[in-house]
Image 1: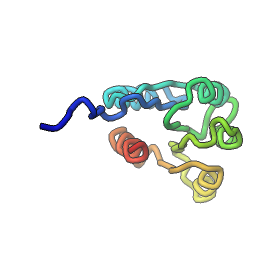
Image 2: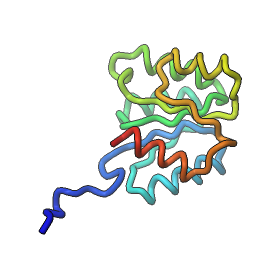
Image 3: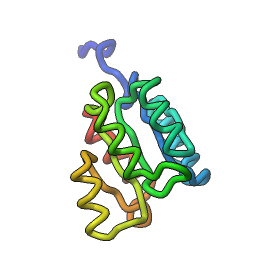
Image 4: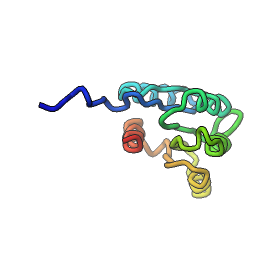
Length: 133
């Protein structure tokens, strides 16, 4: 009989920081993540996203590019420049899809660039699970 005590559900003990100003999308993704047993921390703008990154040490960050105040490019650059946060994987989630933007975020250190309009919330969750295996 397998020892089931050692098996943890998807997302157990893993925190996801969701930096997204669109309430509808933020709520939708957060609900899906919670259903998969992830702890979700939310930030509505770039500045609070940086603060919450330092305070909560998330397992992964989902980052929008178009944000009030500091945009996602600046947030990503600051996260990757800080030795205490630079190793946290960042997935950029945006509707900006020009090749220059994709290359810029990947060069800044993002692990993936997902186009919101091309993916369902379930597909986004699948990408997160794959990265956090």
